[in-house]
Length: 125
Image (cartoon, rainbow, N blue to C red):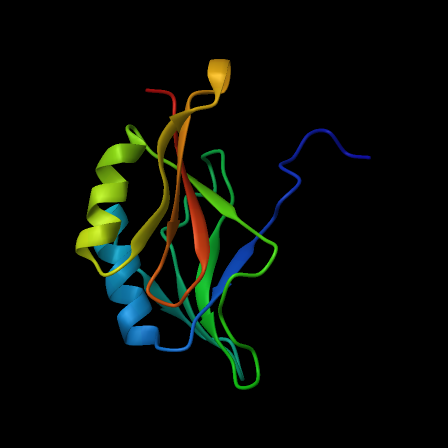
């Protein structure tokens, strides 16, 4: 096993309405997503910084693949997860679990995006 890299190399959040989902994520995280050329899958990538830690990924729309509450939760790093939680609600999402302590590991919020996907927000304060 190679311990010199992050174990997750990429993520895709499957959506049904790309315009609605793109608006949600751009508003919640104050970023601009970029369209990727990808054949049969519509992909809009989150900002990628190869020289920084973390995992790149994208919103994805593909015929036959639905969004929803599957078994995967992606946690987004934030300065204060309560701030992004408020933005998520303002962008049409909803909160599953309000900001809660996870002890020495900081705090989390669990939220649903506009496509029914559960996401996690993490911060140390």
